[in-house]
Every structure is written in C-alpha cells, then in structure tokens.
Image 1 (cartoon, rainbow, N blue to C red):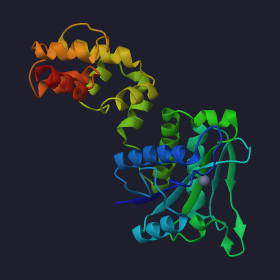
Image 2 (cartoon, protein in one colour):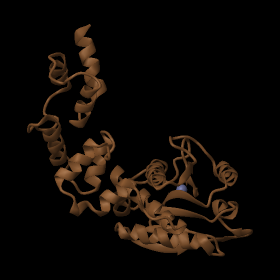
Image 3 (spheres, protein in one colour):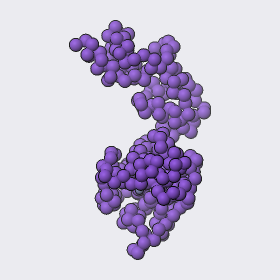
Image 4 (cartoon, helix red, strand yellow):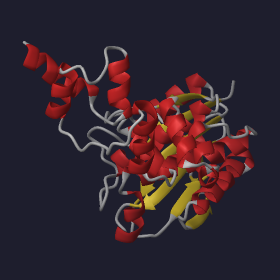
Length: 289
Ligand SMILES: [Zn+2]
C-alpha cells in the first residue's frame, strides 16, 4: 500500500499568515479534503494534525521520517502580496519535481493561476527544512495569497478549500501511478451524465455522505441539492414533499404521532430528508418526559 504524509502548516498559537483568511485554518481544510480523497483511493495517509493544535516543523519532519512514506506534502498558503499558486521542490528535482508538476496541473485545472515550480537554496542545500530533512520526495504547496483579497477569495469557502485539497490529491495519485477511484471524484467527472433520479438513488444508498456534508458534496458536484433531496423524499416516502419546510418541533410532534415509522427506519427517513435526527429525538424525549 502506498503511503503519503500530509503536513498541515502552522496551527494552535501559530496562525501562519493572516490576511483576508487565516492560513492555519485554510491549510487544515485543504489537507483534510486531500486526505479523504487519497484514502478513497486506497492510500495510507498520515496527517500532522486534524484540529487546531501546535505541531512544529521539526515534529512534522520527525513524524514523517518515522512513518517513511512514498511522498510528503506540506500544505501552506502564501503571503507577501503575490497572486497565485506556488510549489517548492528540491533543487535536485527528481520525483518531488514530478509531483510538483502534477499538482500544479490539477490546481490550474480548477481555475487557479500558477506562479510556477520553485526551488530555494540555503547554506546547506535546500532552504526549507521540510524539503531538506525529509527522506522521501517532499514538496511545499502554497495555494493562494492570504493577503491578496482577490486571490484569497478563491479559498475563503469550505467547498473551495476542499476543491484545492482534492486537486492536490489528484496530483499525488498521478505521481504514484494510481488511477482515480474516489466516489467524490467520479461523481464530479460524470456529473452531467447522471439524472436526478440516479443521484437520488445514490443518496439513498449512502454514496453522498450524511448532512451537512451531503449538501456540500452535491453542490460541489454541480447538483441542485433541493431538487435531489425532493426526489429522495419522493422515492422514500412515495410522495412529493419540500425540504426542511418544517421545524424540528413540528417533526418531533409528527414522530410522536407515529408519522415517521419506528427505529431504525425513523432515523434513516429523517436523515434522508435532511433533518437533524438527534435534535428531533431530543425534543421528542423532552415532550414525552
Ligand atoms: Zn505557511
């Protein structure tokens, strides 16, 4: 099994660059989406952090070398008033340079301009520790400039951050010679060929995660969430309804009145309609107490 290490730049007390967006937070969302995408393709991924904690560069380097991956990527965003994506690889090129090229290609494919592949020389070879001290091919990606309003606005929403993470993942997969089997990726690439009926059936078969991720994924793939969810309701309940027109309390009353079947079907139906099952059940419990 191929192994990839994802370093998430900054975190905790170290926010990284701060401008129109905060680097440490954007880095994390990009990295998490990248990890998810790689794992869907059978890659073993180690990530330096999954929440807002401190993990210094030296710790990331040691952790990475212990893990001994095939490739390592440190995920950052830039500052200094430029515009566009940048990627640093080792002066000696090699697989790291190929990886940088493959990622750059995917980043450009989602509409971000590139300032190109870069190297930086220090007194002791490569300037950046992540590139100099890591034993496997390693690179540093800089997605957008946080202090350039127009550039930063391309990564100020979660779906945009996730798209960058997926683009990085695609470049990694290409470098590893692995064809893309991710559910998310497939849905994205064949979006225009699937009918609302087909997508609704996929939702019912749990291929589109649960709320609130489902809405996000569907919209990211270009579908109208309400339209899909109405179709899901139509299939599951055999009638036309509208999404989320009722309050949790109204639904709780319906649950008590027996309109939502019994468990475990109830939870399934409520979730399929986009309702927060736990919140509703809490109200039901309060009302019945
Ligand atoms: Zn940084």
